[in-house]
Image 1 (cartoon, helix red, strand yellow):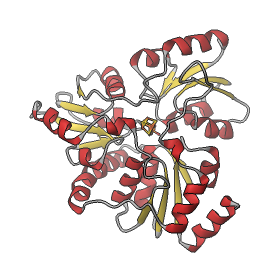
Image 2 (cartoon, helix red, strand yellow; image 1 turned 180 degrees about the horizontal axis):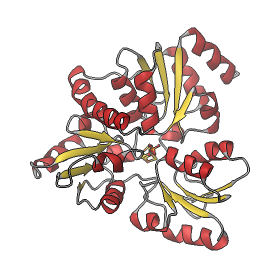
Image 3 (tube, helix red, strand yellow; image 1 turned 180 degrees about the vertical axis):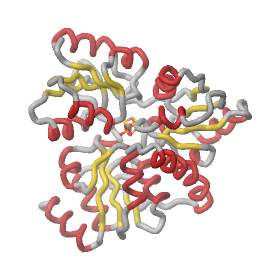
Image 4 (cartoon, helix red, strand yellow; image 1 turned 120 degrees about the vertical axis):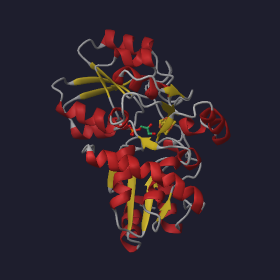
Length: 311
Ligand code: 13P
Ligand code: SF4
């Protein structure tokens, strides 16, 4: 079966759109109508007018797309595509945690379940987190969840003292300074670029820290030609495509591989995408009450991003 051809046909027939994250396999990124970071994908999902969105990403992203476009059928090629960060913040535990800080507002990274978003005042992504925090008064008390690495990074950049939930991304948190220092020794001319989900010692080594879109744009505008890249390996496809003359070296997750793959992102395949489009399942369905409450902090994020012109 020529999945690419069949997907193109079905897409037209069903008035469907494929949204994909930068961590998807190259074949999916190539067939997608839009490839982006979490912020770009949310902004896109909010503006499109189609009958169906096939979301090639993970569950919280597809759920966000559904909330921003509730009339549209949203399918996720593999419903098991979760996220360790979202899983690190169970609803009941977070509810109890929040009670300890009654005078704090909650800023949640978009990598959370809809249930956590119902307990959130403003959602953010790695692409707008610093600006969203800085848009609030200096003395505003804030709980930041669930990523302690991203939260710690924002605290350092903004001089705030947000209370951090103790969650991490299993893909980024295991990247080590040892691996990066070794790569830098072997490639002294290469710049180090990192996603803020990496731990603090890794971020300290970085010449640039940003969201996946931020990292890609940086490699396009920067004058250097070689980069040590501390994030999920799917991003290399776009970097290489947009800067074919440059060289990108992924920081491996362990000494036995030259890779760093998110096991959830990589559950999606062209075959599953084709089947999702054809069978219109698995669809994202949400409880109406949860959906109403969880959408509000996402809309706040989009509103602030629009005012600050963050894309
Ligand atoms: P961004 O693409 O928004 O930087 O997020 C990375 C990520 O972890 C997605 O799961
Ligand atoms: Fe979640 Fe990390 Fe995978 Fe992103 S890379 S989906 S944060 S587990």
